[in-house]
Image 1 (tube, rainbow, N blue to C red):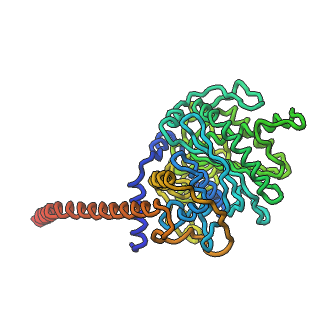
Image 2 (tube, helix red, strand yellow):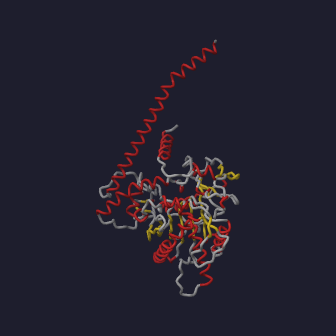
Image 3 (cartoon, helix red, strand yellow):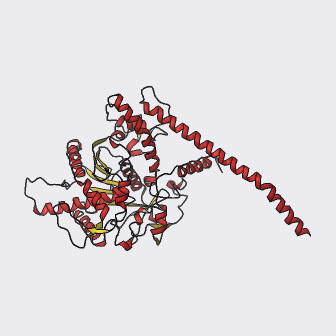
Amino acid sequence: MSSTDDAANDDEARMYASEKEDNFRWVARWLATTSSHVLTEGDRVDQQVEDAVSALAEFAEIAHGSMDPAWILDPQNRKILARDGFPLAGYRALAGMRDGELLENIILVEKFKGNIGNLQGYTALRMNPSTAARQTIDSGTIKPQVILAFSGTSNLTHGLYDLMMVPVQYQPVSNSEGHHDWKIHDGFQRVFQSIREPAIQALKLAIKQMEKEAPNGEWDLVITAHSLGSAVSSLFLLDLLRFEAAWNKSHLPGGDPEMPIIPSSTKVTIAKFGHPRVVNSSLADEYRAQIRRFRQRPEKEEALTDWNIIGYMDGIPAAPPIKFGYVHLCERPFYLYHGRLYYVPDGEYEHTLFTVEEADPQRETDFHPPLFPKGGHNYYGSRDMERLQRRMKAIMPDVKEERTNSQPAQSGSGQNSEGDTSGGSKSPPQHNDPTWVKHYLEREKEEALAWASKAREKGKNYWGLLRSILPITVLILFTVSRLAIV
């Protein structure tokens, strides 16, 4: 085995040893059903789409309630976080660099919270996206994107609402009518209702700012989230579509709509990671009908893209179980397996586990070993999401202390278009770096030394065990050989 393989195996062992959050693999073993369809190379998603999905997952990750997206999206902080060994290294949308400058100009508009467990969300403007947000990419022109992102479960309160899975009556909160057959997860509906109004106001602000900033005033809308946030994002999209349908039928000229009305030139993408089942089949039919209606726009299928990503051995998409009356909303999800995305075939969308045929080693993108072979709930976007959370949690106390002692740094724009995009190189703290950088590097060094020491100790234990059993093994073999001779 090469030294590269040894390093990769050591990194993987350290990653799994560091897991503190539940990845719900046990839920997958308990509830997930396995499709009879075997996914092959023919089911692989195009690399262009994989890159787009991975980029949107970055925006979903930093919505997590343990992080401050306003601080993360500050251009100066993004440049530091992009360095090798820092939390955003390898995050090409948030922290891709060329010639020392950021690839993308991302502007935070509003951070908001709901009143159940302070569920967090934010809106931002992605002014020069490096990846598109839909399946079909036309002539290379990618419009600016308004980002609306929701956090997943980030505290005990959220977890308690996750468990409120008795189906209840769907309660429309826009100016549209409901139906007595529409049932919904009680906890998800309550959480959505608690954050709906702040999300609407944040989205209105983002659209208003984008209409001033965007060339020709044209832009696309992206809604993205992970886990509980993905359930909230689906309910927000449903409400947005149903409100628009009702508004188009009944509004008077000059009226002020409660929710934003999506311009005809704007395409909508929803990207959901680790999405649980939320509604019954009747309400799911309404969700799909609203998407079909929206796709009657001139761009048709491109008008709305519904990307739902199911991760290997993630138990959350398998819950709540079908026998409780719940179904999935998206009928053509993607399946994430060992860092690769596959199309789920028609009629198989309720299954959350699939057998995957070994990848073709001749395909260029397959020249890397399988990523995250155990799967789980916190490995979307082909990244270790928990590692980002853990690192950012450690940084924030230093950041808060610095905020109390000094004025916040001024934001710059930071964007370019040529050169290397690796996200920076490893370097010691620079003379003008904030204090948290020094403390971060010290912690990383201490953790690396502690892991190396633990690995050496483990090796010593294995050698000690081997030395203790070796004499007994030799004695047994000698006795058996003597008996055979006799």
